[in-house]
Structure formats: structure tokens, C-alpha cells
Figure (cartoon, rainbow, N blue to C red):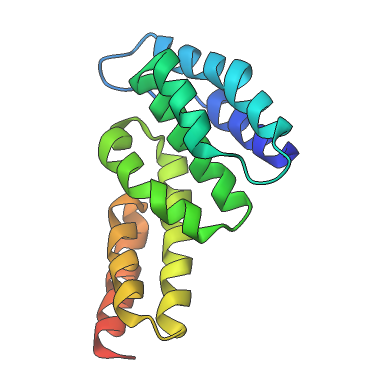
Length: 162
């Protein structure tokens, strides 16, 4: 669990974290930090195995509304990446990016994109070509602009069966 806690604190310490255009004061980041410190980290550390994200989600949403949901999605994606749990990650990244994409810091979006792209290529190579192509396409909007050309090239090669 220790790397999960470190990743959250590193992410929360960046000045770009959760800076939605409306919130220039950092209040949003402070509220998320409080949720992580008081709710998420103790819950994840106390879990015997994989955290019960559904149970944690119900609690966070009932206490904090959308902010609780955002904290849940962020926690679940980071935890899943660290555990290399593609099934869990892939179930949460799309709703997270759709709803809170503008609040996800660039560094984290880029990490999500790289993880998605790596798994897309693994899916493709293991015979799940359509699913691999789909995830490669979904990774593109989260990627750093400098990676777009290479990713588009990869998508075209996948489509051609190369």
C-alpha cells in the first residue's frame, strides 16, 4: 500500500492538481487532499486484499458528493495502475475522464495514456485486435501532444494488421 500513498501525495503536491478553471484558489485540491488523508488512505491500508471500491464509493459519494466520486476514481485508477490491474483500471478510467477530465493534471493524464496504450498493444498482440485498437484510440486524448503522431501511426498499423 505504501507506493499508493506516495503516489497520491506526490500527485496532490503538484500545483496543477485539480485546478479547474473556476477554482484558482486551490480549495478544490485542499478538499481532495483531506478526503484522501481522512478516508481513502486509511481505507486502502486497512483492506486485506483488493479494496472494495463499490463500498468506498458509496461512502465517499454520500459524504462528499461529486468530490467524493472524483476522489474515488482517482484513487482507483492509481491503485489499479500500481497493481497492474487492467480489468479494474479499464472499468473506471472512461467514466473518470469523461466527467472529471479537465481536472486531471496533465502528468497524470499522460501516465493514464501510457498505461492504456501499453495494454492496448498487449490486447492487440494477444489476438484481441479490435479491443486493442479501441483502447489505443481512447488513450490518444489523454496523451501528451508530442506523442500523438506516434500513437496515430500505431493505430494505423494496428488497423492494417501490421
